[in-house]
Image (cartoon, rainbow, N blue to C red; front, side):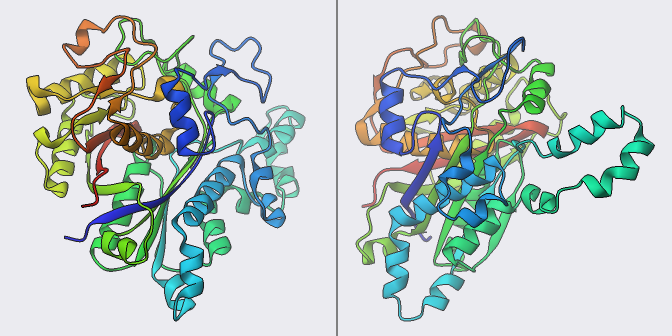
Length: 422
């Protein structure tokens, strides 16, 4: 089976712009969670978020013409994707290729976004106000009120489109919209295409920008948002906090990467996904979906539970999800469960972009031989059993990590990576 290397990465999030910067902040116990700054959240019952510093994310784009055609979330995806391509050295490789057109045709883009659309309906709010809520009045003026670029700004595959335009990569393009599990699925699709020989290289991107009033109100109404902090597996946990950003991984066959002398961050071993099919917001208490997703990932990777040195839990801090995740890990790993950690206490929940970022941090942990602690963990919830989580860093033995991801509609995904490229 073709081995798949990660040869480049791009990151934009509240804790930094590079994997190393985010990792150092995390190890230093720093969190990106803070009161919302980019709009007036005074009086909101839940007003914490992990924001990217720039109020106008499109200013991060070098292409000025593209700025008018992208929302905040799309800009994060394009910036991260371009950074991963640059880090992988693919532009130079294309310049040196015998046929640049073939190089482009053999390069794929897989982009995920999971529900963090940024102010898609806000262009219509002034008209709603003027019409006083009367639908006939609203409808009669609607065609005149729609901005000419509205559709191009709101397409879910907008980041995919512009990343293709700016890179020239013309191989398979796909946009996955599967809430939080989409980032792992994008990586899995890229790996499958590479193993099948459909493409020679692929960029897996995920992006979100859910920190705006409509999204925040929706999550708060569902009772999913924490008041003061994200406390994975803690007895006092009361929800998640939304984050934003973009993450990208450049992937290619290990032998090809070696052949061109590329630097390698790690290796993707396998992935798995499963659905619980029990409700839009419900999770099964026994963690059945995660159990099956982990089993599929282990099978895909040719690994056994004993091969896993580190587990990066979804750990979003909601009561039901954390408890069922702990149940799933007990079922798969039993008393031999390796160290478990979680990163959303510092990053916020980046929805589809969460697991790809956590994957890159997991590789940092493996390289350093240490599992970072969960700084907000004070007392493990008895409902989570004897799950091996800790506030303090712990040593690691091994080179393989399991990253877990969960999304609305009972979607579960698991990814296995390792540092070794021997």
